[in-house]
Length: 106
Length: 239
Image 1: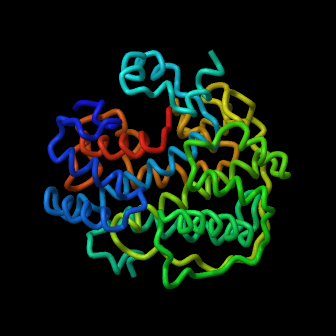
Image 2: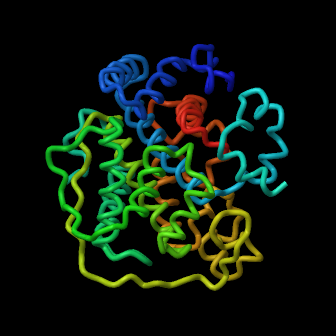
């Protein structure tokens, strides 16, 4: 899996139907209803109807977690922080506004 | 009857039950908010999503709120619901300045996050947003766990075992829990609701580190992580 595709979705994720999943993930939390309808149909065609349910559940769950994390102002856990220096740099995660919730403790 | 009986897509019993249970939770008094206040909070969050074009207004919204929220509290709810990347310590302070205690704020963050989750799911499978139930009578319990301390978040939390004592043992099952799970522990009932949704929608907690396990029919674990990671990238969530 190429994690850079998470922030640059035009890249190949290296995951089967990754492009379809990336499009669905963006559309489900976006404002374009037609794009969502199209992404849902493409996901169903690529991976089947159960995948639409699973992807929706995961997208909803992480919509929850992102709000819980930013709302409560939690830092990332030490072991994750220490093991992701290169990845955070590669993906530009350190530039996210919510990164301060971790960096203010260093 | 299935909570998602109108879905063209096969929603399993675990997910269906977890969502029905959370909607029922919304309609009950919480630890800090009355049922009417909780309905007002989730209604404001949903309306923010509709106003922002992120959700389609349902024909049947269900129960309508009659508890009033201050403009300052509404602003906090709306920021969390639709401007998640911009929610920061100043927003938290605005909530405190508006009169919310830390436990009240924690419950607010929980139920706003939960309703966004459930509304995103409904939108994903192409069904109308589920109607809210009429608020039930009952008083908030207002129980603060004595083990909660200010660690590294905006609000106090229950530390991992052994520092968190008996309540950590009970809540966390004696195991280490990452910040994302412990974040709502100042209000244990919301922590439990958070865990229930997490297990139904992502992975059972004992399976989170088992990378060849997928909880979702039709998706491998890497495919699940593509969706999770892309959503969090769009939300600029460092965690």
